[in-house]
Length: 249
Ligand code: DC
Image 1 (cartoon, rainbow, N blue to C red):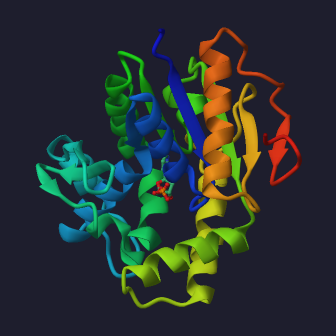
Image 2 (cartoon, rainbow, N blue to C red; image 1 turned 120 degrees about the vertical axis):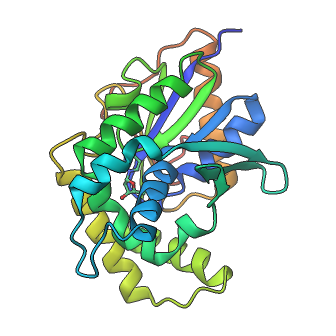
């Protein structure tokens, strides 16, 4: 069976990576969390003093450091998904802190960072059989992807999900800060000059505000099967699958 390319884009904290990694496990594809790559660059920049306390980025030094930033993934059977490695060291936990979340969007706007990440991502997807999630996967990284999904959910629902995730890990946080962070990141992600977050014309839209994880999984699997069985990526770009609209069987 042909091994296709699946691009899943959408806003932060809308459950893209949960969907993507579950499908990858089910169908035996490689899963790549492209946001983790921008987070790893941010962690590197923080740890090397390239981000001042007021948020100013030392772009010249970051540009010079880019060849020294090598990001890779290694499957972790305990978590059932790949861990992120920065220069050979596992940074999976350290890239998920609020400090990195607060600093990552401006890093991800920089051309020098994006060019290098997109190059690495395209190399990872050369053979097909890959599911990558992010912001520009269906538009810039793999515009030829056979299946493209654009995921969305309300900012409040996404902030609550992030809050639950951080508190489960024992990290101190409050809802107001998180909601502000989600909204700020939405703004930066959709307004940046290079590869802003936007729905590809041929993407299916999934609003999962009121969907459970198993429901999303079932929906995605069905779309995958439809595409590999010769169907088109389906409905037109403005088709919407929203919550429990009766489209789930
Ligand atoms: O998905 P995430 O929240 O882990 O992404 C972290 C940041 O990286 C977020 O601000 C958007 C950015 N990003 C991006 O610009 N392009 C991608 N393909 C993936 C993430």
